[in-house]
Length: 179
Length: 405
Image 1 (tube, rainbow over the protein chains, first blue to last red):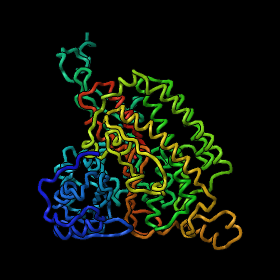
Image 2 (cartoon, rainbow over the protein chains, first blue to last red):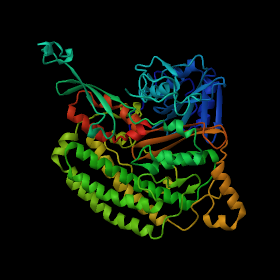
Image 3 (cartoon, chains in turn red, cyan):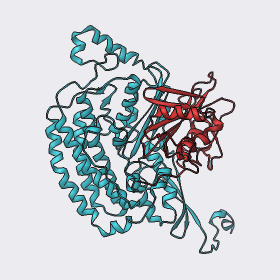
Image 4 (cartoon, chains in turn cyan, blue):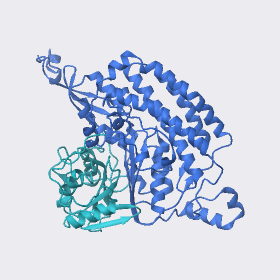
C-alpha cells in the first residue's frame, strides 16, 4: 500500500476518532467545520452529494484529499450535466471522489450559470483531472480556469458548439467533413 | 528548366544537425495502437522526449445518443463501448439503472452475472495477452489465445445469441435463463483452462526476449498511479491492492473467495504478471459460481420494469398490457443521480446516470478505465525508446471504443 500523504497541519478536532465515517457523516462534519464550502448536502440512493460554491472547490478538494481520516486521494470521475437552456443555474459539474484506503465515495457538485461557465481547475490536486476536465470542456463548454492544456479532446479542434448541451441537435447543425 | 523551380519548399534538401529533435506521428493507422490512437512523438534520435496522445478518431457521440433512447435501449449502446468486455459494460449500466429504480435482483441472476462477467474478463485478458505479445514480436501466442477466447465467445453466444454484442444483462435481471447443458459446457472449458494458462506461461513468461522488452519499461510509482487515477491491473502492478470487487462489493462478490494479485515492480512486466495471475483467479470465481447455481427466477418481480415471459403474455392480459407499455412507453424512472463503479477487465468502469423522471435518461456518462489509463502515457513513456512505446501501450490494454465513446 502507498504511504499516506501527510497533511501540512493537523486538523482542529483531533480528539474525536473519525476513522470510520460514512459519507454522510463526512459531509455533515465538513458543513460544520467549513460552512462556506457546503451550500447544500443531498443524500439520495445511498450516495452523498455536497454542493460546493465554485470559488471554494480547490480548497474543499485539497482538504478532502489531504485529511488523513478522509484521504480522498483518487478522483474517479468528473462529468458535466446540462439542465437545459431555460434552467438557472444551467450547468452542473460533478466530481466523484474515492479513497483507495478507506474505500468510501463522495460526490461534489458545482453549479454554474450559462453566462459564466468558469470553474477553477483541480488539476493541481489530482493530475487525473486533466483529461476529465478537457472532456467536460469539449462537450459542455465549461471553462476550467488555470488548466494547463485546455483543448478539445474528443471532437476536432475546429468543431463549432458544444455537443452534449441540450440545445445542440442530435445530428449536429450540418454534416461534418474532415476535408 | 522550369520544373526545378516548381519543387515545393518542404522538399528542399537542408542540413540538419544530428541532435535536432524530430516530431513524428504514430498512428492512427498503426497496428500496435490497438485501434485508431494517434501519438505525437517528439524524438531525440531513438529516445522519446514527449508523447502526446491524440484521441477522438472513433468518437460517435454515444453519451448524446443515450439521452435520446429509452433506458432499455441504452444497453445495446454499452456493448459497443469496450467491445472486448461488453458484459462488464452491460453490468455497470443495468446496475446503475437498478439503483435508480431500487429493485432487487434474484440470486440466480446475480450468480449468472458473476459467472458471465468472469468468463468475459478471461476473454478480455486473452485478447490483451495475444496482442501484447504480438506487438512485442511473439506471434504464436496470439493464435493460442484466440483459440481459448473462441470457446468463451461460443459460451456467450449460447447464452445470449451474440458474440461481441451480447446485451445479456437487462434491467431487473437477465435477458433469459441459461440454455440447457450450459453448466456442462462451462465446466468443459474450465477443465481445459489451467492447461492453456500453463501453455501461455511456457510461451511467454520464461521468454527472455519478452522479459528484456518489458522489465523496467513504463515505470509508474504507486503514488503517481493513484494521482493519475489509474485503476485495474495497472494500479495493482504498481503495488496498490485495490479491486472494486473487494472495496465496494457488488453482485455478491463479497461471498466469493479469490485473491487480488499485486506486483510491486511498477513496470510493463508487473502488469503482465498481474493479468496472468488474474486469469487464474477468474477461473476460481467461475468454479465457485458454477457450484452456486441453483434453480430459480432470473428476472426480478417488477412487472413495470421487466418484460413478462412469452408464455404469460399468451395467457394473462395484464402481462400483455405490461409488455405493450414497456415497449411503447418505457420504464418510468424516478428522478435522481447515481454513480455505479464496477471492476471491469481494464479497471474502474463507472457509470453516472442522471434522471429527471420519465423513460429516457437526462445524462449518461461512462468513466472508461482505458480513457484515464491512457492519460498517464506521457508520464510513463518519458525517456524510453520508440519500440518501448509499443510495449507500454500494450500493457495499458486500451480499447479505443471506450476511450472515444
